[in-house]
Length: 98
Image (cartoon, rainbow, N blue to C red; front, side, top):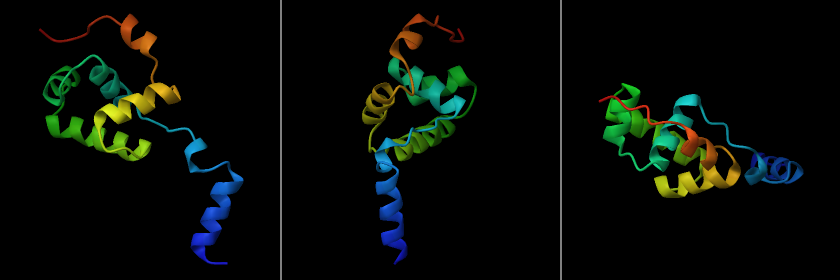
């Protein structure tokens, strides 16, 4: 059995690769929550006290984990999968620097 066949059979035995839950880091989750609130990378970077490239790195990892090509699609997948909950995002107060 080839390596490709082995991986395919493992994915089938586990219910497919799409059934595995996506594990986001705390920073990735926080980044998605701010994205849900309409913040840009620059704004998120200011809020999280990091560089804009760090925020974009988080978004790159998030898109890879959800196997999508855009922030919007990643946000939708995160909400659909329960990785973030809209009620949690809306109930949190604005914690932005002045």
